[in-house]
Image (tube, rainbow, N blue to C red; front, side):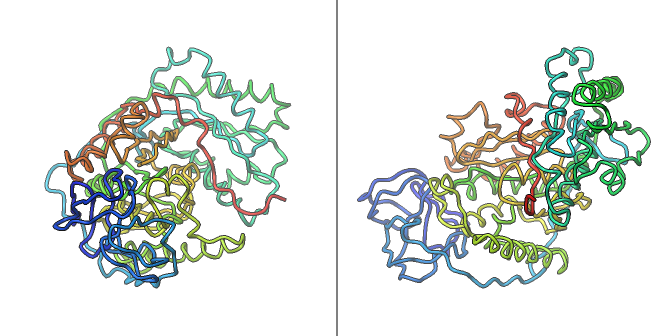
Length: 514
C-alpha cells in the first residue's frame, strides 16, 4: 500500500527507499510516513532517498521488490541513484499460475462505443486507406500516392475516410530470409487486415526478397470475406516505372473511396476493442501514477471482454516473475520466460545485455536500474490474469490481458502491437513523448503535473493528480477508460490533432544486411 507523504512516497512497507515528490535540498528534515529523516544531499524530484542504513552489497527494495544493490554503504537520508547502486543477477521464482485469480465479474451491462463494423466481426475505430510498401525501394512511390490525397480536397467528398496513409520502411531486401523476413511479412499482412484500414494498395519494386506473390499466398491476402474491399497489388518494374505506378495506385485508391467513405459508425461492444499499452520517455513517477492508473483501465476493458496488450520485453526484465505467477496456464508463462531467454542470447551476440537500460532521460527522471523501470512498467498490466503471450506482430486472437514480444524502442514496439490488431492505444510518459500511431489513435497520459502543464498541447490526460493528492489511482484509471471509449468512437487525440503518426511505422528488423 503506497504511503503518499507530503515529501516522499513509500510504495511498500518492505521498501528501504522512498521517492521524492519534488526536489528537496540537502539538510532538510522531511517526513516519511511516521518518521523524520535528515537529507544528506539534495534529492531531485522523482529520485530516491534511503530510509535506513544499507550496507554495501545489500538489496535495495522498491515496490517490495529488488531494484538493485548498494555499491557502497548507504545511510538514511542519502540520495540513491546510479552513483551508489549496482545491478546483479537475481534468481526469480516464476511460480507459474500460483497467483492466477480472475477479476471480479462485471455486475452491469457491458459498455459500447461507436465504431466501424468490419467483415469477420471485427470493429474499427478509424477508417483509413493504406498504401503499403513491400520493400524500401517502393517507399517513395507509396509516399507520392499518399501525398496526392493529402494535397487534394478529397475529404470534402469523402468525409468518412480519415486519410490515405503510406506505410513505408527500410527493409524488404538484402537480408537473410531466415531472420527478419517472417516478421516483416507479419507486419505488412497485419496492417493490410487491420480493422482501422478500410482498403489498401500494396506496392513493391519487383526484384526484392520480399516478393508480393509470396506474401499474398502465405498470408492469404487474396482471400476476401464478404464486404471486404479488393486490394490492388503493384510492382514498379511490371507497371512501367515510378510515374505509371503512382498513377495506377492513385486510380486504385480513387476507386475505393466511395465505398470506404460510405461506412458509418454503429454501436459496437467494448469487447471488440484491442488496446495497445506502451510507455516511453518514462520517469520514476510512471510506476506510481500513470501506469497503475492505466492498469485500472486495462482491467476494466478485460472485464468488458476486450483484449489489452502490452509489450517491451526488455522493459519487463526483472519483473517477469510477477506475470508468470498469474499466467492462466504454465504454457503461457513458459512462453514469456522463453522470450526473456531469447533476448539474453540475442543481446549477447552484440556484446550487450538485456539490462542495458534505462535511457539517459529515464535516469534523469529518477529511474536507476532496469529492474526499477520494469517493475513500474508492469503496473500498467493491472491485476488481470495473463491470458496469452504472442510473438512480434502475431495476430491477437485472445481476449483478456496479453503480452507481445517487442523491443523497448517505442515505434518498433507499437508497430508490432498495432500490426497484431490493436485498434486503439494508450501511451504513458513522464518525460514528454509526442508519439502518434496511425492507423490507431494513441492517447498520451502524463505522469506528472508540471510536464502535463508544459506540454498540454500533446498530452491527453494528466495522471499527475495522483501525486498531487487530488485524485486516486482508481479515479484516474476511470478517466483513462472513459477516454479510450470516446477516442474509439471518433474523438481526436492530441497527436491526431497535431498530425502525428505518418512517420512512426517501424517494423522490427532482425538479421544481417547482406
